[in-house]
Image 1: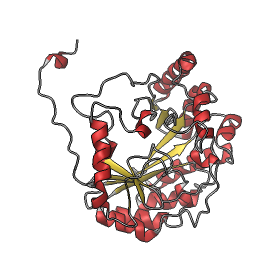
Image 2: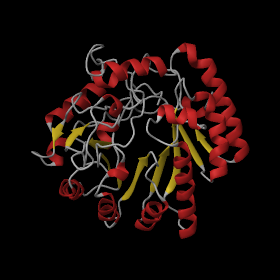
Image 3: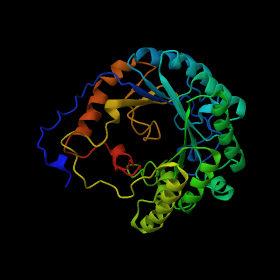
Length: 350
């Protein structure tokens, strides 16, 4: 037994319903995307024009100015950040205030000149989505993408960073593990070692969408999660084998590998030290239209809304009754908010 577990200590105080302003925000700087990925809500919604879907620059600067505690800023949501016409201005505005900035990209638009510009502008991290080690698998999942282009742009990013002699951005590849692609995980580790990428984060699908109407507007993505999620018992053996082989390859090639848990913790009681999810105390998610949500895992601004920055300042929303009620439900002994119940992060499977 771990000796530390034998030491009695008082329980941490319950988190407050009105915490200080957060030091991290995730802003959806565009709701437009150039792909129709199978596991993304964007596939099951009408396409969004990149101009109409862009977060206005004045809204962005107002948010940053209204949260003086901000130290970390993630510029992503459902859309592809490289489609934002204001990306570089946003990046420079935030870094000038000593805020660490990064985002996730599908890399299909990440040309070498863009990679050079992001490195020079002081981007802190860049996560590249790569959900397969072969063109066939990757292009079936990332509908509209070209595998060779994505890999070439990823290696170009590594080259841009090396050419500048820069420590940043930290480059990480993100792989969404599903039934259709998990067998290629060990080969992806080998590909990343060849490309000069040091880290691979593997994650499960983000949500079951079990809180939505089975015949409603989320029917298609809900069914996709049912068909592809690895957290069902039937997939554990195959996923465990792929994870083990990937771990062996990563250890051999010097790639840092993060693997998810496949067993949900829905039966686990909430800790006396606090709620199972601390997002509503630590950070906030803002859609391109200015809608404030508890986190990025929600997907869909019709599922839960805590405020609108077009009509209220951020601090008023953060400390307001909707946020307080959401935090209270996460802290209590009753069921959490419905939108949290099928969340992979809440269930510790993400």
